[in-house]
Image 1 (tube, helix red, strand yellow):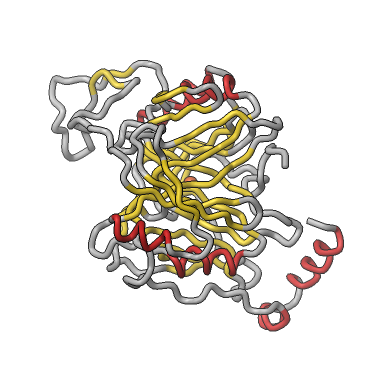
Image 2 (cartoon, rainbow, N blue to C red):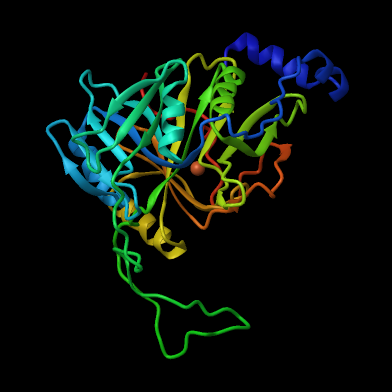
Length: 363
Ligand SMILES: [Fe+2]
C-alpha cells in the first residue's frame, strides 16, 4: 500500500462510522440474478498455467495428487479422478516467467456454447489433440486474464469406487451415539491426496466492478456470499459466486472475485482449488507434501463460508493452490448473504498476514 494512501486511509478509519461512510463513495455490488438470456455453464473444467520449471512442477503435481494424462514436449495435462479429461494444464514458460492463463467452464449444452461464441470478444477454437477433444471459446480479459468456455469434451468413465492413494479401508465412521463400524478397522498409508476435480479459482481485481459485471451479465454466476469491508459497510470487497443450476444443487462457489487494494495495479489469481475425498485424505496429503519439502501456505483448517476443509500450498512457481473437502452445496432456494469480511476459518492455524496478496509470484 502506498504511504500516502495508508495515511489517508488510516485517518479516515478514525472518524465515526457515519462520517467516514459518508465520505467514502458507495462501492456496492448491484443485485445479480440469472436469466435464460445469459450463457449457462454447468461446472468448472480446468485451469491453465505456465511454469518456468515444468519438471519441478511435475514433481509437485505428483505429490499434490494430480495424475499425468498426457505429456508433450512443453505441456502436461493433469487429470483428477472425476469426469473431466484434465483439470490442470501446465505449459513450459517461454520467457521464464510464471503465469496463470485462466480457467475454463463447461457449457450446459451445445446451444449455450453457441450462445457464448456470439458474445463480444469470443474467439472460437478447437481442442483437437488434447485429451477428450472438444471445442473452446477464449475471452481475453484485461490484465492478461483469460476465461474459457468448453463443450464436447469426451468425459472420463468414473467407477463407483473412489480411487485413493492413501486409504486401505475406511468407514463407516463411528460417532459418540452411533457406532455402525463393528469389528472393522480404519486403515491408511502415506501418499498424496488424490485430486477429484477443479473446484474453484478467483481473482483479485483493481477494476472490480466492471470485471464482475462482465462475468455476471454474460454467464449464470450468482452470489452465494457478498462481503463488505470491516471499516466501511458501503464497500463490498469480496464475492463468492456459484453457477445457478436452478433446483439442482451446486458447489457454494466455483469462482470468486476480490476488490484489489488501491496499490494493486494489475489483476492476479488468488488461488486455484481442487477437491479431494475427505478429511483423512487431506491430512495424509498434507503430511505427504510436507515430507516432500513443499511449502505450506495455510492449513489444514475449516472455512466458514463454503464450509470447506482447506489446505493451501505454494506450487514451485509461488502460486497458491488448495486441496478442499466437504464443501457446501447451494441451489436457487438458498438466499445470498451479505456480511462483514472474516473470520475465514472456524479452526486451523492462524491465517498468514499476506494471505490476501499475490505471494511470491513474479510479474
Ligand atoms: Fe478456495
